[in-house]
Length: 120
Image 1 (cartoon, rainbow, N blue to C red):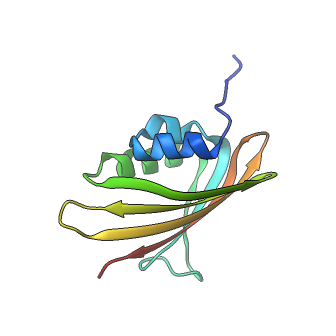
Image 2 (cartoon, rainbow, N blue to C red):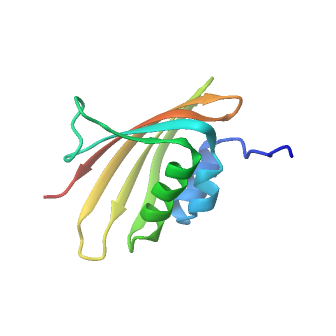
């Protein structure tokens, strides 16, 4: 059975992110993709790595299942790279700023780095 992948575009990332659509976000990744996350709990010397389709799907289910808003504020795409900034707000007012860079292969994400800064 041949799997059809949704090509990653800035508009598609914005739509899926702001719509909290975990299934659409997960569809953007290769089966062996890796997301590297750097934040207050995961410094650059020990980033969190989310590997493979199953872990990536669970990651997006968790993020999209949280009661918060997501706004993709800026995007840039060139060749096999896509970058974007995302501002998130929890109901209690806590804000998170995310900057992400994705390396694409055949139109889908093969590797992504996410750097997050949280309100204290």
